[in-house]
Image 1 (cartoon, rainbow, N blue to C red):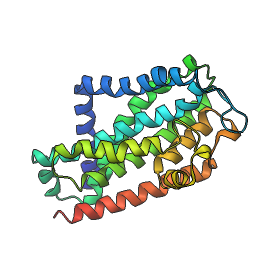
Image 2 (cartoon, rainbow, N blue to C red):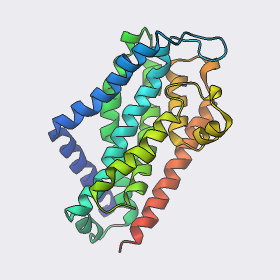
Image 3 (tube, rainbow, N blue to C red):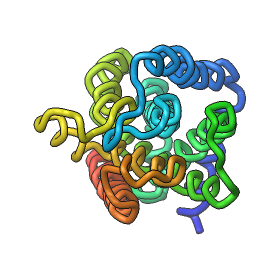
Length: 255
C-alpha cells in the first residue's frame, strides 16, 4: 500500500505542477503545430504521393509522426525534471523515503505518461483538418498506442536523467539524443527510402515502433507500414520493461 501511495503522490505532484505551468503546455503544443502546418504544409507542395512509398498526402503521412513528436518532447521534458529535483534537493527526500526505487521510477514514468497523453490528445483532435476520417475505434486504438509510447519514452528519459546532475546538460540531451531520435523514427519520411546504415539506426529506436503503430491506427494503409502492429506493440512493451529495470538499478546506486 505504501508503494502505491508513493506512486500516486509522485504522479499527482507532477500533474499539478504541469497544470500550473500554462506556458509549458502552450510551448509544447506550438512546436508540433509549427512542424505540421508550416514545415509539413511547405513540404507537401514538393512531395507528392508515390506508389509503393507514400500513397497518402504528405500532411496525412506526417500526422502520426507529429503525434510521436508531441509525446517524445513532453515525455522527455517530464523525465528530465528529475535533474531539476536533484538540484533543489527534492530527489534526496524521495530517495530516503521508505519505498522501493522501482516505485519511484514507475511513479515518474506514469507522471510523464499522463502529461504526454494530455498533449497528444489535444493534437489528435486536429485530424479532421487533414482530411482524415477516424471512427471511435481507431481513435481509441490511437490513444492506446499513445499511452504505451508515452510510458516507454518517459522510462527512457528517466534512464537518461540519472546520468546528469545539472540542468545545463539539457542542451546536450536535446541535440544529441532527442532530435536524432525524432529524425530517425520515420516521422517525416518513410523508413524504406533511407540508406542501410540509417535503417539500422531506426530499428533500434523505440520511437520508430510507436510512430509505425500510430500509422497503423490512423492511416490504415498497409503499404505505409514498416513493421506489423503486434511487433510495434511488443517492442514498445519490452523496451518499457527494460528501461524501468535499468532506471531502477541506477537509482539503487544512489542509496
